[in-house]
Length: 231
Picture 1 (cartoon, rainbow, N blue to C red):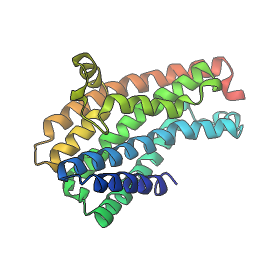
Picture 2: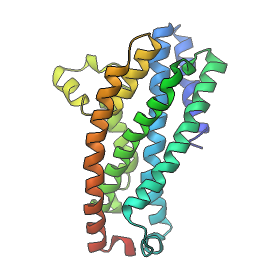
Picture 3: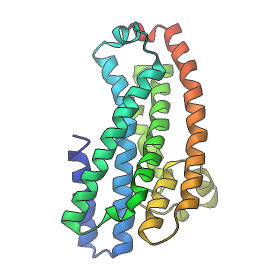
């Protein structure tokens, strides 16, 4: 559903919203790049966070982690699925935007895989973060898997420019990799060179990625210590 249904519904809602208010190309590009970009991040993040919760709800963690599989393998496997799902979601959304609203996101051209990669890297970091919170604080906070992406939305300029914020919030936003995906997409669509933005985005993403991957082993050890996988 999240590969096809939710992206299509999002495109329909925001597309109709834009048409109702007579939005110009600049506004359309802002909205559609936000909707489609956020779908990429959300799908890849949910692949990890929700994938783990399904294992918990079905009481299959014990069987999974009695094999040679580690938490790092688990995260990597679900993230690969998230990449595939997010890529399909992108093309479904972009096709719908073009067919129904004559908005061509395929104009991103050779930057499409780069934008998707930046998005799924953001999704990986958010997914690991949500997974860590659940493992450390327990299932009573499993709602964090869905809540955390909504918090990220606030700082990432998905549907508005972060320039409307006070300068200190704008400074905080620079530490969120997702903002660079949206800014670079909008730069391309408006004929601006996106390479400096993409470079900063990948640098921030890799810093977060190193921190996240380094923490996975610690989280794995802690989960084994408290017997989380035996539930």
